[in-house]
Amino acid sequence: MVFKVIKMALEISKALNREIENTLKKYPNKEAALLPLLHLLQKEFGYVKKEVMELAAERLDVPYSKVKGVATFYTMYDKKPVGKYHLQICRNISCSLRGAEDVLNSVKEHLNMEVGDTNEKFTLSTVECLGACGTGPVMQVNDDYYEELTPESVKKILDSLK
Ligand code: FES
Image: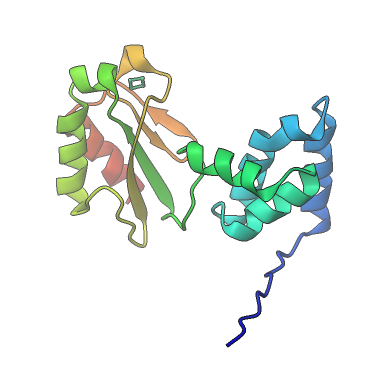
């Protein structure tokens, strides 16, 4: 039996195409624009699926494997669909010493979710260092940071998102 690989093309609006061109212009060479381009495409398509990585590779003239390697290395790129609010809780050393595990347990209990779960509203993930180590425990919700969390304060934040 022969399987035919069908490449799914993404719909690229004129506005998105313009944004891609503007992003590429900011860098000395196309490859240097890989991270911002993935950010832009994630914002547009919701997550970095295979077709998004193929598009990035095509626009940057780099191998698909290069894009995939970068996209899968960084937790900031979602490789599968996420809820309206993507909760990313740091559990690296500074945040852990300041109670990240208790904050995480509070979130899990309050939302009845486990790490890796997605429901209609939330995706719950843990990440390695959000770069705000002095004000941990830290949770990133989409593009916003919440710092110096406690098991109680994080519940109030979650309630405000519901
Ligand atoms: S250790 Fe949590 S932000 Fe760096």
